[in-house]
Image (spheres, rainbow, N blue to C red):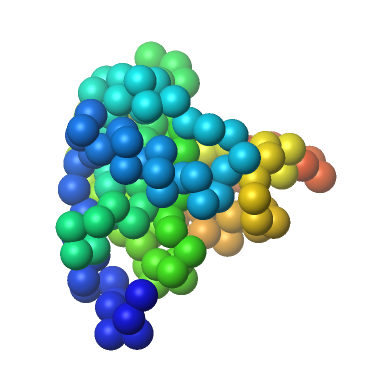
Length: 149
């Protein structure tokens, strides 16, 4: 990535079913678990999602699942290494909150070091706290974050 690229070069938009292959491809650089294109496609059709693009390429994503009738769960959020620490995660969350259907009253996120990854996992507590979440459960492996809407 060129050093001239900054957050203003990144375009946020609602995720589409046609983004599923790109999401799986981007996630391969991180996860040992392979995401299933058909499952991602279904999630993108049925639940709120946001993708970050730069120069026409998908560089980050956030998609949700229904946790309860009135609660959404962030099923996955990921930003390509070269676009991290540039506010992309914040932009993804802000875009999600802006377009969140009104029938949802809360958003949760779960992060666990027990999920296998290629790179060493860093607990995202500060990221979620800065975005208005609270920690509702935490142990040595897992943290659960909640934001009331």
